[in-house]
Image (cartoon, rainbow over all chains, first blue to last red; front, side, top):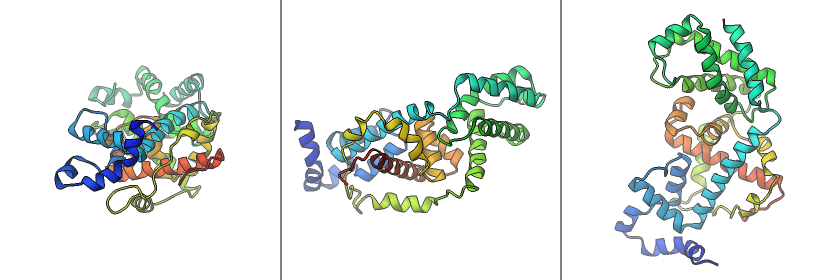
Length: 104
Length: 195
């Protein structure tokens, strides 16, 4: 097991052991991290993002969740746009032409 | 062309062909993406597009132009999709989803059960074709939130405006959508997560 993975595995234990009013000002809980990830936050260079990535770098559970989320977004996009019911560029173009006729 | 200026409004009211053509070409692919996963026939898709633009043109006077034309149209389309789904009775209240999100964490905000390593699921090449099937298991609001965020890549602010939810509820809806999709995908592929 890599050092990173090993550290991630002990993160919650370490956090709970060393939690003080000062450290809890900086650290985020898993719930807070997941809420922010699902709102699409963490793309800027704010202080909050630093706190987010600090947690993600140490917590294997949230890191797994984030990996899964990124992968899900990718396969969903590919899967849906390739599906039998999705329209291609040519079909949309034909619809546009027919719509134009209806509205003029 | 993102916002509705007076000049564009006037052009739309007189059904300017060049402008309409340009808007259809810019916005209809986005609207079609929003309908991705709905399993609509090409005819139904076209009819929904027609109804959406019809409503947009009828409501031009009430559209103040503070949001993008695209956002306004997605909002109308989502309402049309709601009407369609309502007839299929696939609804789940936001409150149910909210409770489920809270249940995933301890009172201190830590995971009750850690999400499993997604490695096994991610290594499967078949998963793409199961996504559409699994999306059918989501509630209306979960599906809308997921498609707008992950397929369209819209910002939270825009999605909240379209779905008329606050940012906390949006996060909850997306969380539930992902959890349901994960479970469905694991089931579809015979993968047993460590939960």
